[in-house]
Length: 127
Image 1 (spheres, rainbow, N blue to C red):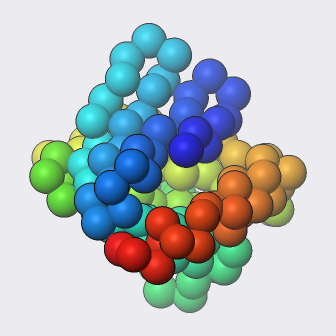
Image 2: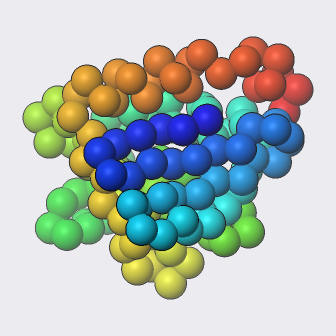
């Protein structure tokens, strides 16, 4: 599965729903983010994109952010902030360094939500 945004994309290998590996491609580099179950990735991404949680996890680049998910192995964490109808995603590495900022206009947020909801039910159910 590819979740695209301008020059960046998140690649999720759902071949093994019990352990899906994720990468970030920023136009020049492919960075391994980590892995989790397809159910975990789908549910956390959908929740983060569809809702605006009230609990703030911290401040990144002067913006209040909330936590979306954390991945095993490479230990990257995804945070989000809301700007009008748009979302800004921040990937943070295991050393708490921001490695990526992905701006998602509202129409792109909806596209990602549709892609995540369209994941094969059998893939998610078997995770």
